[in-house]
Image (tube, rainbow, N blue to C red):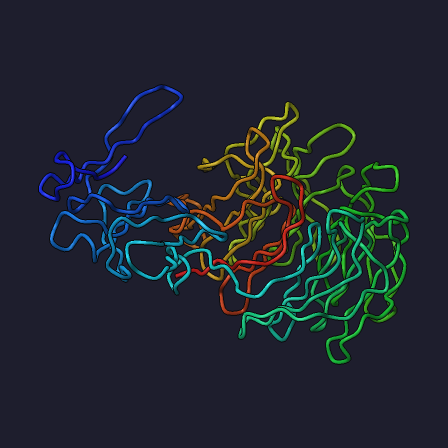
Length: 467
């Protein structure tokens, strides 16, 4: 409840008071007062902020707008307030923007923070196809290749798209040789290699390579063990290490396979410390780090490190499982962040841990950082600085999360003094899970697809714009 007047029909009693009613406790609490008394103003809530437009009372009430963030101590004026109006209405529209109508003026659209070049989530104006469980790979030319996935009504898409950061636009790419979702993908020689996955016919055994020069997909061999939910990582000599995943019966796999770009064939490459599927993998210096995931015994509490040069395997144990956790490598520091996840009881892990790959044997550091929102099945990727962004996922109630978080290193070589913060523009435009998060060459983070609360595959995309 905000503004109003103590003298009906008169601006003389215009109020600046703001109260918040909690229906659960049936109580009112006082929020910071408006900068000026207003009656007949329009107000709406969007993306972590309450915004007030126009009204009458103070001399400049009709021509000003104010906003209050959830954690702000006072209201601030909106830099571009829009047209002067009174007795108007404001409603939230798609993407988080507000439509302001009435008050003897034409309708206007209010864009929340983040649509400008400040730090925040920017809704891209061109739409990608609806898809989830797809891959998004940054190519050598700066474009992002989005491939496969599911639209929610079929199992496995054969479509691909290319996103051009310079123009913020998507265009159709060539059709895959084999429809697939839950596959692994990695950038390779300017193109991208897709490995495994599944579709309506079962688990996919083949791999295919995107050739950017010819804009086409080419056959790239057959896995020794068909698998989905695996990871693919570059190792020595430009070879690709395929790790873990699930077979056609849903059994987690512990085997490793190595793909050669010279022969386009797969060969055996040893085993992980335990079968693992739906895990995450990131490169860290001369190593590949694998963490999270699950097998028949439940969520895994181990982190595996594979040396890229000789495939020597090391393992560290945390003691508590993290299914649905995400890994991110902190800008060449040799420190990997292991965030969130779900333990064997189904409880969300409320923290992130650090894996130090600079020492041998590598180790899980004792330091932890609490998350603002415990989450699983999210995505975490490092910006091209000392920060890591966490986006999306599920909360403790199983709902989807639209809040972003940032971990910032104080120094590149140590976890001491690092802090967790909410993203300045806290909320993404859409809560999502099973999406992709890709670092662009211009430092933005591209968020594509996923499922919404109803299990519907999402179209469109948004980008996180760092400072």
